[in-house]
Structure formats: structure tokens, C-alpha cells
Length: 325
Image (cartoon, rainbow, N blue to C red):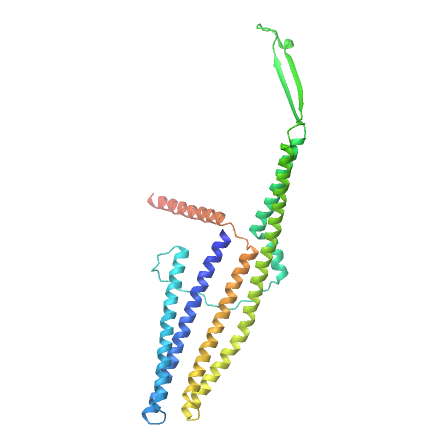
């Protein structure tokens, strides 16, 4: 439950970071198109370009503003969702301290699989199920074994005090074995054997499911890691392409379409880079959840913090009493 809660909170936080980045990218796109529209309008006013360039730039700016409105709404929804996850009022304004960044993950797949085998809660639960089924089978088989009981009693032979030497002891051992039970015990044994096989199959299926979960998340992490490097290079290239397209248009050797296409390509490249960072961080969270990241025992942490708080309060009360004296 703790691992699932940790995963939910982390994913909600990264969703909010992603929405914030997309909102900023949309605002950058609007700013670039506004600046470009000013240049196009200035050239149109002096008769250098045609009216169609102005109209096309205005349409692109309107579309970019619509995208910005959608991005702002998506951020507000992500913020409200984060407030719900952590238990804050829905209208609480949150300030993000972190950014979507790339921090290398140095564990290989074998390490993750080995760690999951030791720490994944579902595996422990399935293993305990097998142990319980084995114990139930032993209990069922005990029906074919003799039942042994022993007893000891002490008695007096008169209603007068006879002294310690007149005390009598009786001891006995009773052995009982059920030979004919019309197959009831055998039926219980067969049922327990079936339950054991079912528990063993559940354990094997859980092992396979955990391995698949770990492998999928690990491969997703590495795939997003590769996209980070390629999209980062694409952002640099798209930024240079947009700068050149602007200079060519201002010099009269390029077209308005070249500038707008370069602007779209730049926004897309930055969006892809942000998406790669988001996928990498969320994949890392999913991988940590799938391998069963150990918790530092939240209950113990709360008790320790409570003890520290109580100690601090007591010290403050003692100082207050001394000051009063």
C-alpha cells in the first residue's frame, strides 16, 4: 500500500511538471509568433510582402493561442488532481520546486530482477500462500496417524486426614486411531494437495508477472533515455533552423511559410524533449515500484517524529517554569 501511494503521488507530481512545461512551451510559441507577426506587418506596411503573409501569420498565432489556453487548462486540472492526491483543498495553489531533469539510472536489468525477487510484496505473499498450503496438507495427512493422549490423577482413599503417604496416583496413556472413516480423511488430503498445487501455480504466475512488470518498465526507462539524447539534439537543430528561416525572410530570400514551418518544428522538438524527460522520470518511478522499493517504515518514522516533538515540548515547558520561578 505504501509503494502504491508513493507511485501515485510521484506520478501526480510529474504530471503537474509535464503540464507546466507544456504550458510554458505554448507560451513561447505564442511569443515567437507575435514577434514574427510584427515583422510581417512591418514589411507589409512598406509593401515588401503580400497580404497573404499577414493573414497566414495571424491564423497561426490564433491557433497557438488556442493551444496555450488548452495547456493552461490542463495545468489547472493537473494541479487540482495533485491537491486531491495529497489531501489539500482543490483550489490550493502549488509551487513546483523541481524540474523535469535527467538523472542516470545505474542499475541493469539483472540487478532489478534480483532486487524484485527479494522485495516485491506480491512475491512474499504468494510464497506465504504456498507455505500455508503445505501446512494444511500436513494437517490433512495427520488424519491417518494415531492420536496419543496421556493423563495423571491424584486421589485420597478416606474422608479423614491420612497423611502424605496415603495419597494415590493414577496415570495412563490412550492411543486412538481411526481406521474406517469412509474415505473422509483421504478426501481431505486430496483437497489439500489440490490447494497446494493451486498455491504453487499462483506463485509461479506471480513470479512471471513480476518479471514481466520489471522488464517492461526497465525497457521503457531505457527507451525514454535514448529519446532524451536524440530529442535534445533535435531542439538545437530546430532552434538554429528557425533562426536561419527568420534571417532569410527578413532578407527577402525566404518565405513566410519557411518561418512558420520552422516555428512549428521548433515547438514540436521542444515538446518531444519534454515528453522524453517525462517518460523517463515516470518510467523510473514505475520501475522502482515494480521492484519493491523498501520503505523506511512510515509508522516508525511517525513515532520517532512524535517522540522528538514531545521532547521539544517538554524542554520548552521546563524553560517556561524556570523563567516563571
